[in-house]
Image (cartoon, rainbow, N blue to C red; front, side):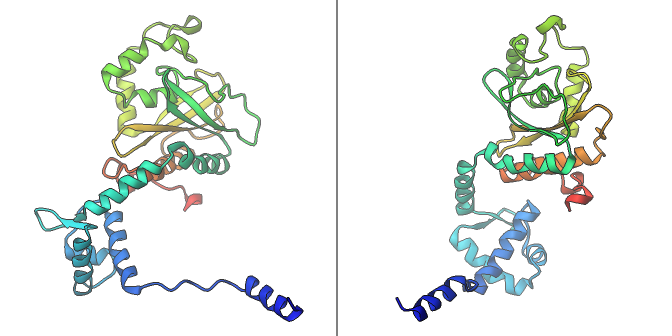
Length: 289
C-alpha cells in the first residue's frame, strides 16, 4: 500500500460516521407508540395524536398500519392499546432481562448521588439475601456482606419483602427466622413478631418504603424500597444506609426520593406498568433531573 493510499484509508477511519438513513414515516409511527407507552393506558385517536404532537388526520393512517401489523389493537370503546405482536415483543424482552444486572447501574448511581452505602437484595431460598453492596466513600460500620440473609421482621429490607408476600408464604418463612441476621429467636431476640407487625407491613404496602433507625445495627439507619416485575411481585429490594442522624430518612427526603425514583425506573423496565403509583407520586430529586 502506498503512502497516499494509507493516508486515505486513515482519513476514512478517523472521519466521523454519517448518521444512518431512516424512514421518516416510520419515525412518526414510533412517536405514536412512544406516546401510548408514556400514557400507560388505552387512548382514543384524538388523545393519542395529541400526546404524540400530531394532527389526528396525520396519525390515523399510521394507526391503521400499526393495527394491521399487530402492534396495536382497539378495545371495546375504540381506544388504542398494545396488540398481540407488541405483547410478544414485550415478553421476549422481559425474558432476556436480568433483574440484578439491570439494577447494577442504579446501585452505583445511588451510592454516588446520596453519598450513602447502597444495597440490593433478592428473596432467596432462606430469605431476603444481599446480592450487591456498594459502600459509601466515607467509612461506615455496615455489617452487611454479600450473601447476608436478613430478618423478615427486624430489618427494613426484610420487612419490605414481607409486606408483599402471600400470608401463607410469609408464615412459612417466619418459621425459619432464627437463621437470619437479627431474626426472631436469634441471639436472644423475641421469638414472635411484635404486635404492630401486620400494621407495619400494611404501611409499607401503602408507602412502598420502610426505614430502620439504628436497629438492628446500632448507629446505622436504612431506607428500603421494593422493585416490582410484570407479575406484580417484588423482584428486588433496594436500600441506602448511613450513620444514624447523618441523612434524612423521611419519605420526603432526597435519599428516599432518589431511591424511589430508581425503583420506579427499574419496575417500569421489568414490566410493572399499571402496578406503579402515578408519576406524580414519585418525585425525582432536583439533582437527578
